[in-house]
Length: 379
Image 1 (tube, rainbow, N blue to C red):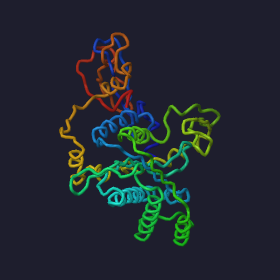
Image 2: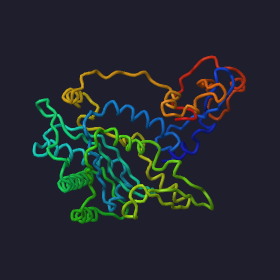
Image 3: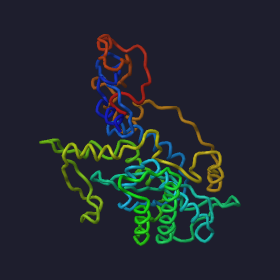
Image 4: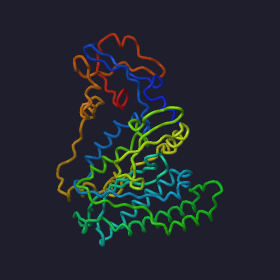
């Protein structure tokens, strides 16, 4: 948490060092301080999102995909606060096992599916809202090597999915407590824990299953917005005045919106920072995971599934692209070209943290092109 705060505070400042981007003809020089590259930094999210999405565009199978959301009741928010990694691991396991077991049953599908799941812990106002987004293949690889399609338009009955997920999640939470892995909040006893889980048995858990999209890229593009960059982007921040941070948020259906209408709110600086920090994931924690055909290991059977769907061409390995190439592809050519002659800028003369660029870098033409991908003005 402290590391995230320090990184975001010093992102693209001389504290992190940098390099110089120059026109090869010497017309233009640009000092580019390095990005902090922290996954919660709103300034550093664009390029990692594009890289992640580009990789999954090649990986997602050419079949319809469903979008499934598993939301944890807010009564469990205190458990999440004191056990972020353990709680999230339990949520991933309960959701993936629920989908795998139900869709592995011939009654519903009878095949091995692909699941790509991403953890979110916030809502539009940065309050605690722990939920899991999952992209699920609308079909699966059967034991005979054939691709089985769903028999019905709906992937799974919502009530069946909700009841099984609720039961698995509660059983797994009990198991973590029994093994001494789960830490209870202060003044919260084991009896309180059991009473809470018993109370939640009668509460319908919010599980959504959307109709199939023609391909998984649509949902993956939506998920990519939340994978890097933290819970709020710079574009939503409106002002900082009188110790208050003012920002925009989408109105939900409960708030009289349709998911597109926007409202405005303000929070004291301390409250805003506190809410932002509570959504920083634990260090080295994986917030995006693949299961089944998308598990990413030698047992995934992705190749067999691709063959069953008619993919016969081998995956081609593309050459790594530098940050200028990504800017060009995104239509931001002005960020990497000389405003006078239009030639692509060259990155050179790296300088260390706490120092400024050498004067020689701003008075001569760059001699050699260097590939600096994640540092600089665009990251």
